[in-house]
Length: 104
Image (cartoon, rainbow, N blue to C red):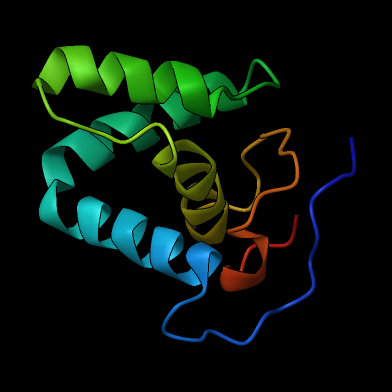
């Protein structure tokens, strides 16, 4: 499997990656308490040297009883890396790669 790409992409209205990242960013803005829990778990795991976006997404679903599309999970990892570049996420290639400021 190819690794993530740091190549920035042009966002067109119908680009699936741009739309997905925009939806994930909107979810984060609309659910600040749930997002803070997600980030809190990531920060807690930072010292252990490994973060799991999938685990945090599942945990937040249960703790906050919110709906989260599975497709948002790679976007959440990238949004988290934008906010805290030291988080030790291992990310794979995603269609959202070109629409983040995070260095992957």
